[in-house]
Length: 112
Length: 115
Image (cartoon, rainbow over all chains, first blue to last red; front, side, top):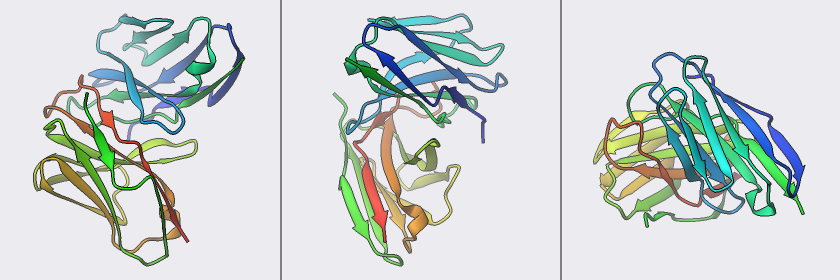
C-alpha cells in the first residue's frame, strides 16, 4: 500500500484568502497524479490529472503543480470562495494500471 | 455526461445480515471500483473489476466479495455485516484498462450503518 499524505487535514479560511495544500507520495514508479474535489452530499469529481515533472495545471482560480522527483504536488486556490468548500483528495498512480491510492484529503472550509 | 448510480444513499442493517450494494454506470466503462471512506483515511479500495466476471482485490478486501455479471453493474456484498463495516461506500468507473491517466467517475455514495 502506497503512503500518500495530505496536509493539512483541515483548513478554515476567510472568503478572499488564497490558500494551498500539499500531497506527498512515493516518487518511485510514478505514472500520474490525480486531484479530486469532493463537495458534501455530492460525488467526488476530478480536478486535474498530471503526469510530467514540473507540470502545472489551472482551472479558474485553482491550480496545481507537480514534482515527481521529490514526490509532491501542491494545490493552490486563489481568492477562496464559499463554493470552494470541499474535501480535496489526491491520488497517485504508481503501477501504470488501474488502481489509485488516495490520500486522507484536506477539508477546506471557506467562511463568507 | 457519465452517470454512476448507487442503489441507496442510506442503509441501516443489523449485524450478521447479508448486504448488497449495487452500482450501475452508463458509459460502457471497462473498469469499476468499490471504495470505502472513513474519517481521516481517505478512500480505500476494496475491490475492482476490469471486465465482466473479472475482479481483483484492493487494499481492504476482507469481509467483502463482489460480483460483475454485466459490464454496467458491479455489486459489493457483505456476507455477514459487522459494525466495523459501518462506513460510506463509493463506487467508481473508468474507461480503458491499464491507463493511469484517465479519471475515475464516482457515484454519490451509500452511507451504511450496521447496528
